[in-house]
Image 1: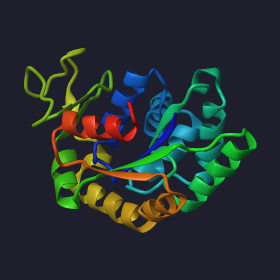
Image 2 (image 1 turned 60 degrees about the vertical axis):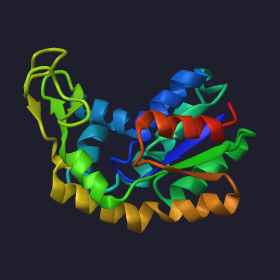
Image 3 (image 1 turned 180 degrees about the vertical axis):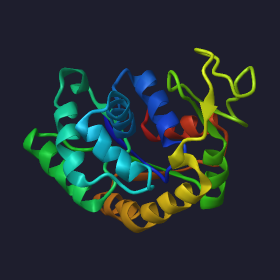
Length: 214
């Protein structure tokens, strides 16, 4: 079962991708996690990615496509995977389809978690990340036990640059311009399924599980 998660930044597709991966015992492949790991380790890819991410811009295709295709070729992806954060543009989707076709594979579902922009700005503005261990929280939905202090390591929390309202609005603009055409792309291929991302997380997940026929 090869699944692509679609939706604007902050729509909750990452949360749903993790739940799907856990239920079906398939890898959750997040380009965001890959980039953040590279940024934390100070790699050249990380440095390049950070300059784009901090401005709310998409990381260029050439930094992403080969990395993702190599990842889905690994043994743990034999029974499927959930792609979260890729593809983000039509050229990426076409490159993925071409690469999978060479392997005799194809994407089975593209699930769009639909949330209005105003909800997303509010959601992301409440996110906080630990400066020490990288654990993430939310002031409203997943607060720490002690205000401003990480539950895991006791480090301080910050609002990341890419979660600041002005950056979020810019990211949403980029999404609507470059990524939303994927909705039409996967509608045309007949694999798009849209779910309401404004309802409770568990309700969203139940809907997705029904779509996957499990």
